Image (tube, rainbow, N blue to C red; front, side, top):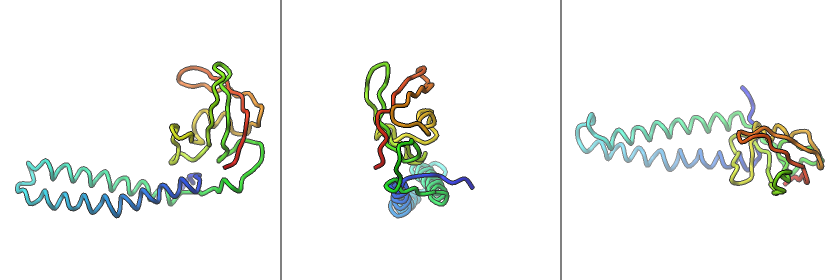
Length: 157
């Protein structure tokens, strides 16, 4: 069973989603199924079939979350330090073509969210950054072509 590295915040978010699916969504869907059953013939009851589909998706998500939580390896980023980039590091980069500054935290796959500045440890950028230090030049092949960055800061938050 392969371990999933993640931060404490990522673990907590998965736990909260699991609790929501179990204690809010599950009873709501069961009520929808019960209500739809009162409408008569189930073979042509769209509400019933839609609720059963929702139930299937919710139960699948519960199973997925339970699996991720069981395989989680929680890493306390606040106890990490150093100037070498590794899991949990918050890295400030400068795009060498546009001089645009970007800040990324390297996190586990389940908690990655590019809009929030968190990239998965398995992403091409994170793989290129791992092991580098402040001042390093990094080249990453992206779907839009090769990109060059300079590491300007390595931080632990």
